[in-house]
Length: 423
Image: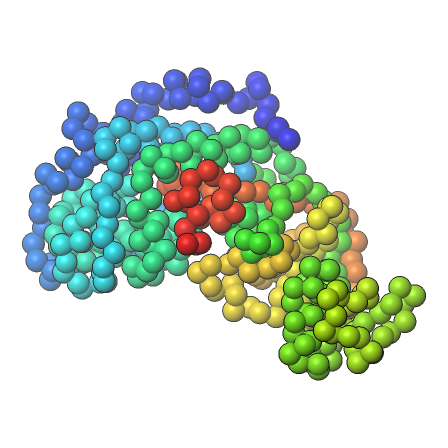
């Protein structure tokens, strides 16, 4: 579904043509007749490890954040400028490969020079940081900035995913930007004065109002074999203390094997069985070794261990997915957050729910907490239903020429190097 307004949007060809003069001076001040790598290699070398500390070295992480929504005309424009920057990088030879070796703050290693070159080309490390072999505070800050731009924990630790992201070739990143600017353009129209946007590859949610991000929420989205779908709908209901009805896929793939291992699993997890007439069926009457799962409803009572915990956010869609709380709060701190069966788990879901219910009289944080404490189901119809968009954006840019990349977890960008979390 295209949301572009032709009178407001420039075609990509026209944009790139009109922006050529701007692009000539683009990206980290490195544009010149020489290649970017030449500039880096000829930069003055700094001294030894003990003079490489810079109190400002970690400020780059803060500069990565932005209040501009991913789905916005500004993001389309910024990403088009990023295309020019990356065209220049590719034209000038890209960036070097960084050998996977043990690199950490305080280390001295020849591989740090390649790391410095790589981070300078992408604008994460200042050119005047020099070409020392020391992993100093300049490099530490640059690595953290790079990690933040790629959706990784900005801890400066050179782990597997950081090396994989560093070593995606520049031309592949350029192609990723080209693919995603088209996706962004289709969603650059009027999405409503208030809306919720779920970016699946980023495992992140934005609550947007007045063309600004009001709040961001870490999410857990669908596994590779149980993908969260792309969709457009409206949030019409928030349920506090919801029951949870297990979908057929979870009954067959998860619950049946668990019951074979532990016949008390359903009882221990407050899951009850009901037939088509609403009669409760004892688990002991079911043959859990049968080839097919029983034709029964598996419903979990409200409570602290309920799969949706305190909250379910409903919107009509053909995929029967929704957003919800979770008792497994630790999942929000994982480096990889593709762990659901298609629905979207929301960190700080009560904050998002209150924002959704802003125009619904009688709801504030105190009342919400009181209702949740009762452990009794309480559906709330949303006044002025809020549009919700599930999207798949793996590359975009902000107004500060900060380019964001995410793992192509569902392999939709067309390059195997971009699906870094598998194989």
